[in-house]
Every structure is written in structure tokens, then in C-alpha cells.
Image (cartoon, rainbow, N blue to C red; front, side, top):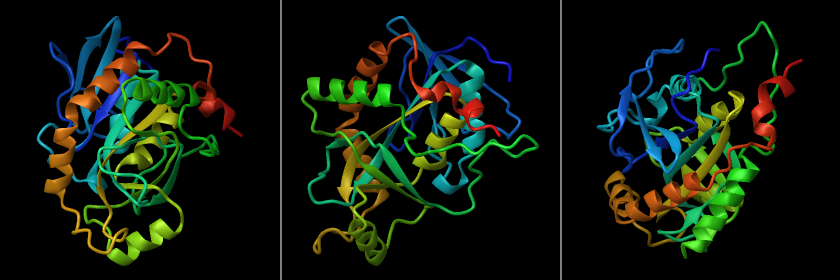
Length: 266
């Protein structure tokens, strides 16, 4: 596909993160997969051009199971992005991971249904491996920056991705916890996986906003209002972490992310 030189780094904003940059150029992108959630907001961090898109739309009108993930990711690739960072609000499935903590996920479990989850639809056959989906270079950098900031950061974590828009039942939540999975959200798949299919580097940064309902007996049921409230309390830390990571991303990539499509082709 033809790409433009609009930005090198992409950022998808989730619940509570609808604006990221000031002095932006708004670029509307039409894709072969339909319209993305919103325009790309192109701005600058340091000397780096950055493209931002709120995955739910700027007014949070798009539910997780209705997001056009392929269009969103295609738009980032079209803009010229080589790395895409996906911060998100998540629930904790383990007692040692608390609200306000950050988790730099290294694995995911797909518990979704019916989502368009690949760009590869033939006639050329691809079998990508998501064994180590997330970019090791970006993960290492994000962990270092978080530690330098004094943030409580968990260096690994398995993201359980549910379909939404409903939250888990207590029985489901207890099952996820029993599997040893760490955090739960609604958007990391297929978003992060599609980023990798497009030969871009994915990075997930999860801010924990609550303990999921099955974890502790007296935890009140999770609500979207509470998720947004806790995310808002931590919004400055999220933005500072993102800004600092982006400012320190090296120009050259030495990871396997950039050759995913060719490596997976039969």
C-alpha cells in the first residue's frame, strides 16, 4: 500500500483519553475497510511526528465490539507510522495488581467473538505467529521509563480481551483469574494484532482502574463511570509516560515486527 510521511508514531486513545496533542492537523482518512473511528490528529512530540486517534471516537460513541479496528490500523499505516502505542483502561484479575498500577502486557487471550481480525484474506496465504506479539524494544523502553518515573509497573502480563460492551459476570471473572491471566479489557484484540500484521510495532500500556468483580468477594461491580474516574485521576501520568516513551524511541528498528507480513507468507 502507498503510505504518506505524516507521522512515525501512532497512539490510539481509549476510555478517558480523547485528546493527546495540541496544535494538531486533523487528517481524515478513507480506507478500503470503511471509515476509522475518527480523524488522525497529527502533531509533534520533540522532533517526532505523532498521529493520534481516539478508538471510541472523540465523543466516545463507538462501543468496543463495533470499532472498525482494521480501518483504524490501516489509517495509521497509511500515515507512515512504524510504531503504534495502545494505552487502555483495564481491570485487574490478580490481587497483587492494584488500581493505579501500570502493566506492560506481553501476552493476550482472545475472548471476543465476530470481530474482523485480519487483513489477510487471500489469495496469498499468510500464517502470522502472535507468539510474542508485542514489540520487545518498545516494551523494554516503556518499562524503563515507567520505573524512572516511580510508577508501579508490572513488566509482564496476560491481557484477557472480552467482547463487550458488557463487563464480566462473577463466574467468568473467577475463571479468568484461575487461569492465571492478569488483566481484562475490551480493545487490545484485534487492535494490537492488526498493528503487527501491518509490519508496525505494537505496544500495550494498561492502566489498572479496578479489581474485576470475581477477584475479591466484597468488590463492588465494575462500572464505566468508575473506570473513567480512575483513569482521569491518572491521566497526567499516562500522558507523561507516553510523551517520555515517544521522545526516547530510537529512529531505527531492530525487531522482527517490521517483517511480519513477509515472514508469515507461504
